[in-house]
Image 1: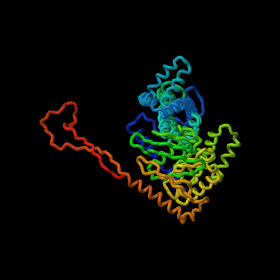
Image 2: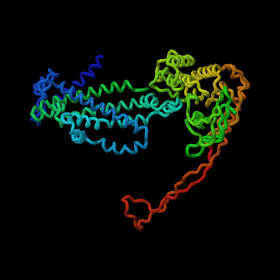
Image 3: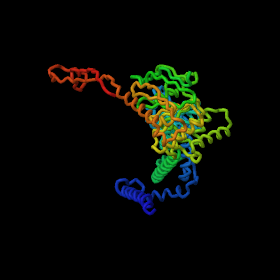
Image 4: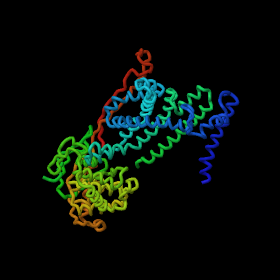
Length: 261
Length: 301
């Protein structure tokens, strides 16, 4: 127990301390505009100790901002799963479908969220007040669905012939084969895709909020940059990192649950 | 007309035939064992009967109906169990029962599944997943699943070959017991002549591949129930065993096949550097091509 604590608690603290020292030294030497750790803490304190405070549209506690961002991510991510999983299934089941759509997917996949967002805004220009939200959702969905699509396809292709033989011998109907054999057999792959997709969705939200100025962690970050409060940029970066880390851990726990032997 | 009838079946996967001139007729209630070397095409044969593969030539009839696709009238026990790992023992068997008897009530289905779990002595492991079971237990689930479908014929594809000797003996006894209770028609594939003699009414050897075919059948005239200990001293058992093994080894030696090999004869004449090159590519390629030849060689396979 003692060595466990040492390994998993003390050693990471050493890492944090090293970064703080490096940061302090940087402030003192080459990066004069970078706020020091102490000053960052001082300025960020009201946002951390009152994480749910709402003092104005763009002046809210950090967890409240995080909550806004998470809500948007959740919607976009669900959209990505709902669109991505069926596409992945079709890709995995049909070679013809793969030949038709794989080149398009490979071309669209590396496109940056910053490039999709303006298109999203244009698409939903008619929506008026909701345009920025719909644009952001579109961007999150289209950027984060690719790992789901590709992993699902791989998972479906990797289903052992034995399982398919069982379905054939039992003459299971198409729906039954899908729900009793195909989906459970490819779940572990699908969840790897879901996890990667969630990571990307969280990356995209920051970019989307920065460009649309929506309240949220990303929007707050950009606003504070424009208001020259650089301490809050660091606060936002740390928050984004921690939240992303927690989301990834959560997904990996869920993923473990669905690992089939 | 026999119950299961295979006529002049041959199967090839593109190249030379794996199986050819397969003729087999099995009577209702008979237990037939097909003994063959590994790689001879035993699994191909059972997949044909199951309908998972289509024969290149010939016809398969079960109960006067042509076999064209897989179906629950032929219960298969696969060599590698083929249980769905995300379902428990109960659910695996229930899936089969539901598929075969869609209009049974839930209670009836459940009772049916329980009955077959009990038949293979797995009631304590009812709610376990296949991953938590030993190989022997998994194979018993697989047997129970096949039996619970109440098929017209039971196909066993080397059901016991992946198990250790002791488990294997226990399961052989169990298969024997279940068969004598149920009197199903059984076609079992095995690589072990002893197992075949112990369980079956008739043994049919499959010659070594490629182009494997069935030899003439040996009838096992040892009365049932057969006793594992005394069977080893039975003169009929010894004689049968010797005959089968001799037949199979003989079939292996007979195989002389001619195969064609591709030979590449490199051109070893020094290149003449004065001959101008074509300017299409950067890489230097020899101007003269290597000579390709084919030769025919006699081999023992």
